[in-house]
Length: 249
Image (cartoon, rainbow, N blue to C red; front, side, top):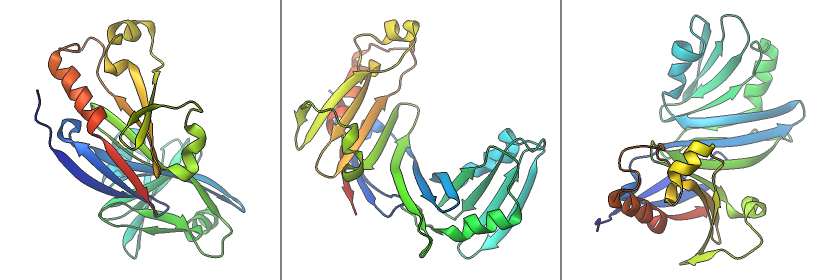
């Protein structure tokens, strides 16, 4: 049997919530991200947050040969990217620890529109995660916030239980300590479904406790070496049984 140790991780959500996560060693090192949405007068935007440096892929792979504009702000840079054919663009709040990106799906907006967007939100970077909140007096509401971590073997997405209760099934889940657990089959193509049948990798797992609702997907390439090995089964069991999450506001 594997000897499992655990790591304690705290990630700050864009809305100021704090996801406190206990990860068994078998989970590996996760890259942390977040998502949030804001809506208000003349504003409806999604924002993707990631650890610092993710946006550097944009000029290299997404908009090669495109336009880049950088402006310095206190505590972060604003980086505007636009595709060479002006088919798409994005704006990045790039801090020393984390960054936030919103995509326009069109040419870069006019300067006045960009300035209004920037003045509508407040970006505050911290080592544990970035906060991105509506500016005071804007009548903007923030919702659909989550924090998620991923690597080649695992995806975990966490939300505040108060806003995610509707995603929890009405029937009672299996009890695991103070948490209920449900599972449902992943939407796989027939070949993947056949290859993963009978393993923990064919399911999406949903956990809910008093403060947090979190989803777990174990990643394994269908046909990957040792898919049905005892080691992989033990690793999956250790992750699913050892994961603990709490959400604090």
